[in-house]
Structure formats: structure tokens, C-alpha cells
Amino acid sequence: MGKEIVRQESPTEAGERSRLWFHEDVLQVLTEETGTSKVRGIMIEMPKKEDIHVAPKALLKMRNLRYLINRNASLVGNVGYLPNSLRFLDWYKYPLESLPPEFNPKKLVALQMPSSSISRFGQSTMKLDWLKSLDFSRCERLKEIPDFSGFPNLKKLLLVECRSLVEIHDSVGFLDKLVSFSVQDCSNLTRFPTKLGMKSLKVLNMKGCKLLECFPEIEAGTMEHLREINLESCENLKALPSSIYKLKYLQQLVVRGAPKLLAFPMSTTTSTTKQCLSDDNNDEDCSLTVFPQMTFLRVGDCNISHCDFLMPFGFLSTLTYLDLSGGSFVSLPRWIIKFVNLQWFILRDCKRLKEIPQLSPSIKGIHAGRCKSLERISNFSDILEHQNSSGWLQWSDLSECYKLLHTMDLDVETMASILLNQHDDQEAESDALTKQKVEALEELKRVAKDLQQWEITKVFTITVDNASANDVAVQYMKRRLRGYKTLMFDAEYLHLRCACHIINLVVNDGLKELENGIATIRNNAKYVTSSSVRLDKIRKFAILELCRANANVPLDVITRWNNTFLMLRYPDAVEVSYLRA
Image 1: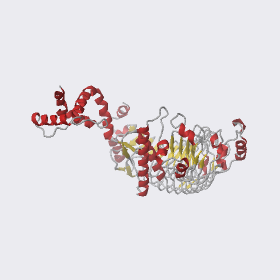
Image 2: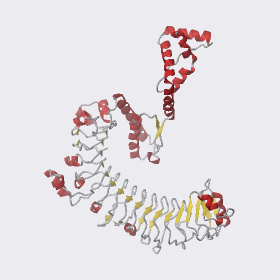
Image 3: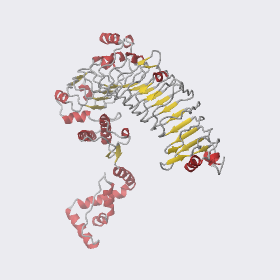
């Protein structure tokens, strides 16, 4: 209805309408210069990607244009002019290296130019008070971000995969209204703001900034809204500042895959907390904690040699997920049991770790795969005794923990049946299903190793049927392949369920409506096939009466609906009823 109202503004002349979205109208206005000051918005979305040769005065005539959205067209020709009236500019693959020098849209709210040829943006004198969103993601030629003090109301800044970006001006670190800031996979970024004081920031994503060596200092009294920091795969990151502990409301911190990070900074409360822990005081006596709202911490593959940095977290913490995988420590502190809310504990590839102390009863999952020196898990007998009980360990991976198996005097099959599966919170699974899950999991483990050995770098889908055992196995595969960085589309389409199995389930559900009739035919068929004498009679009957040389009586199989179809299809099984009469 809305489109028709706009069309009625000028039924014959597209350039007299306030909004243009139909590709033929857009093409006419841009190539024939038929646009007027009445045009407020244009969305360019062609049926297929094509070049549009913009006429010299096409955009100049639309001086009141408020929004311009280009989804897929390649605009060539006179694209060096943009109206200053623009409020929203979204131009995928903008072809020029910079915005027009005379372009000064004082009321611009959003500027989105992903995958563009932009190599430089803005000037020190540029002032855009209304600008709230800026997206230059995948602009491969962008080399630096200049002074942004002229954008005081900016809320979102996306610089994802700007692989030529080297420098970001210090002013960006003090954008008070900025809420979301991402420089993910800016692999050549070396100069980041040295200090951060963004009062409104909630999410900071620096994943894949491989050349960054240090994290900026946190200004006191700021950053109180910051909830998430991602420093995954910052391969040259060597240190974190002690001021990071000023982030009182931080909930998620990911520093996974930073091999040069050998330790966390020590907090001023560490010694006090250590005394509390050693004195076995009550909870209320030890209230000096950092990250009091932290729920998710990943510091895997960072070569951390000790866990003392966890002391200030204390047992008052809300931490539910802790990843220390790849650490070089030999033991874990006994006081880790006081992480009363810890549910998921990842210790994968801690090759020097010899013992896992007693953990909080809240623990649901533990991954200690390839901890080849691991000899003991405290309280392990209780875990085995209550393995199917609600509230106890529901998932674990102790693959390649050979010394542990030897210490516990358990064979691989027994250990696998206990630990390499997931338990339902509501009811215990049958032994057969548990064994099926173990077998499926072990099979995919071998596949994962083969993929690594064969150097297969991309995995799109894995096609298996809909058994719950395969659900568990594919989840393991997803975690394993993420470590190898081989998954496409972040594993969103990894589990491709077998279409034949789905059809089988649907048809079997429909066959339930005919079960009484099918059961009669099935019983007749079983009666015949259970005796070679009766089977010979039916074959002779088929030859004489039905003129068929081969008259086997097929039986259906519950997992294959087509076998039921074959049993019903052959009249031989139906004719058996005459023999039984």
C-alpha cells in the first residue's frame, strides 16, 4: 500500500516521486537525469549485478536527497558528487578512494561503505555532530583512521577486515557515546589508542589483530558499561595492563590464541585474597575481588605458567566458563573449588598438568583432552558413582589421557562409555545409546585427525542421519575444527541432516495410521518365511497362478520404510492368507 501511495505522487514521472526503489525507475533517474528536488530517497537493488553509468547532473538535481542505499550496482561515471542533504548513506563497494572534498553532510546519521575502495576518510576539520554509525568493514585500502573528535555522537564503529589499516588516532579512545567498536581481523594494525576512556562502550572486538603487542590503559572512572572484550588470535600480544581490573562490570573476556602472553597482571588485591584463601575464612571476610560480574573467561593457548592471576576472582565470582587450555602449569590451586558457579572448565592440551583438584559441585562439563601427563582427578570415584545423576558432570573429554587410564586401571572402552558422552538432565540414557554415542564420537575424532593430516583447509558440511549420537559427535567435531580454523560460515551449516533419513521418519509416522492392516500382512509373511515347506508352496503357487518365476516374500525393516513398501507391493504376501485358511 505504501509503495502505491508513493507511485500515485507521480504516476508517469519517477523523478517526481519522493522515494525510488523499483530498479527500472532508479535506472531512468540516474542515467537520464530525470530526478528532481522532490526525491528524498533511493534504494538501488538490481535484479542482477550490472554497471550503471550515472549522468553528469543526475545526483546534482536531487538536492534534497535524504538517503541513498546501493545494494549491488556498480555506479560509474559522475559519482564524485554527493548531496549534503544526505542523512543515511549506504554504498556497497564505493568506487572512489575518498569522499568528495566538498561533501559536508552536517546531518548525516549513518555512513556505511563496506568493501569499498576508500583509502582515507575525513579531515581534522570535519565535524559531523549527528553521525551515529560508521561502517568501513572490508575496505582493503583503508590505512588509517584520523582524528574523530568531530564525531562526538558516534555509537557504532566497524572496521572489520580492514587488512591495510595500520593506525587509529588516539581520539577514538575517548568517544564518549561509542557503544560498539570492532577492528576484527585488522591483521596489520600496529597503533591503537594508548588509552581508553569510552564511557558508553559495551563491546570491544579486537580479534585477529595479529601485530598488536599491548592492550591500552584504562582511564579511571570510565568504561563502566563495557561488557565484552575479544582479543582472540592476537598472536603478538605480550601484556595486559593492570588497569584492566578497573573494568568492574566486564562479563566476557577472550584472550585465546595469544602464545606470547605468558601471564596476567597481578592485582593489588592478590595478596589479600591469597591470605583469605589460605586462612579458610568465610565468604564475607574476603570481599576484595576484581571482575565481580565476570561469567566467561577464555585464556586458552596463551602459555600461562601459573594460575595466581585467578586469585582476585575469588569464590565470590559469578564465573561459569573458564578456559585455560594450552597452559604450561603443572598443577591447579586447591582453592579453585571455591568457584562456586563454575560450570564449564576447559583444560585441553595442558600437557604438563598432572592433577585436577576437587571442583565445585556446579561443574557440568570438563575438557581435558590431550593432557598427557594427567594422572589424577580428585573425587573421581564420586563422579563415576553419580554419572547419571542430575547436577553432576554431564559432559567431558579425557581423550589421550593415557596416564589417567593407567592410574584408574580402566580400559579405553570403559572410560569412553563413562566420559565421552553427554547425559540427559532428566533421565539416564540406555547403555546401547551411550555406546552408540561413543562410537560415533570416536569415528568423528578419527575424521578430524585425517582432515588435519590431509591438510584439508575448508569444511562446509558433514552429512549424517538424525540419531542423537550424531548430534553429540557433530558438536565435538565443531569444537575440534574451530581450533583448526577450517569451518566455513562459522559452522552454521555444518550438520547437514540426511534427507533419506528424514523422509524415512516422515513416512514411518504416516504408516502408523495403517498399522493394523500392515501387521496382518506382516504376520502372514512371517508365517510363510518361518518354514521352508510353506515357502516352497508359495513359490509353486506363484509360478502356477501368478506366472512368476521368483516369489520371495519380503519382510519389512522398521528403520527403512521402503522395505514395508516392498512387502505391501508384492501380492505374494497377500496371497498367503489363502494358505492359512
